[in-house]
Length: 400
Image (cartoon, rainbow, N blue to C red; front, side):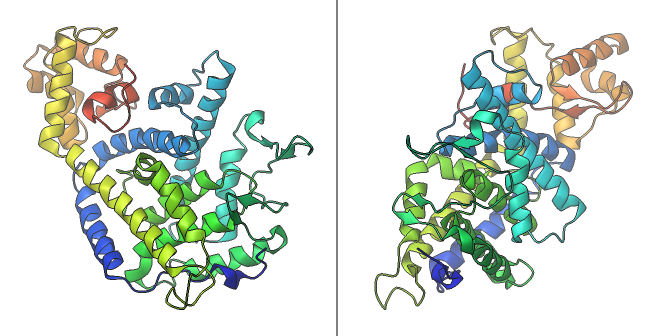
């Protein structure tokens, strides 16, 4: 059982050309992604991505709650089935945790996200919102249930698969070493992307909490990517990339748990080869998701899909959805392009008379296709999980 933080060396893989290439490609592609949309429209997409990110992060843990059900949970519209309701509550906690992390980093951008107190805070804001069934663990029939304390390091030694995590009494030392080495302000800029992948594994290896480590680590990695401006607007989800290759993700984590194979496998206790392969997998998953969202956020193609959705509604081709006027497409696309639409501009945009234009706006707000902070405020695009399936095909599974 590990008692010394040196046991998790190396903390960065040795120099590798493939990792450098992946890092540069990710930096380049992510920079173009943030310029795809008007910032206000990007914020609407980011809200949808929180649901998708939650869905995929929970899916990795074999907890399935579709984004539509997550969205219902955010409105406290829970299922009458106890098991499904509990999963909705779990998903709501995850979405809220994402929002709290984003708010904290916006308000205090200098926050050290690798510090133990920040990582414990992520666990706390997630677990303190969970239903009771999710805060109790049963390790065996012989033992009494163990209660998970939000934001508190585990007080028990654990084994995850074949990996025996560090002794619980020594977790503070491991976490301090983790914080000091991965401090974003101390790392050379050229190492920040690769270090995100390495830190993802090493935090999983430490396994600081009794439960919830996977979700906390993925929330932590999302915060890291945000801090180094790889996901400033939240327009892509690393959890989607990991969940789409779930078995490969779990296998890569396990490979990086292994100890050094020979003198040619680095100089630390753990395998440099295993860590390198995990980092390659992680960065490939990130790059895949950036490219995927880049295609979906192509402005011309996105506008076509919005128009196609309105056409389906106009012709009554979507079950249980009321017909829409064709002119709705003009207003929605105007909001997409410019972020906001002044209410007084709708007659000009649509060619409708003022009274009819007001009626159309009311319908679009009622149908949750547009949103506004007041009856006179400008109109902004709203993208619910239901309409998101049409605007962003393949972002998550269709349940229709």
